[in-house]
Image (cartoon, rainbow, N blue to C red):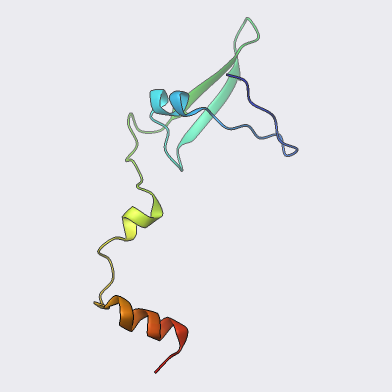
Length: 80
């Protein structure tokens, strides 16, 4: 799978590689070049880092105020 280098020198690590290495946001990785000139990506840190859910799933059930949708929309719109 080919990917394009950005102007900042960044590339996206394909999902199947991230999954195989157990990489999640915040994971530390190390890059090296082997004897044949191939790039090697190695995960650093814990064997399997704790998976971080997306920010929306992580927020579910965290509110300490129970809003009805209509009441919340009136509040957000500044309606009395």
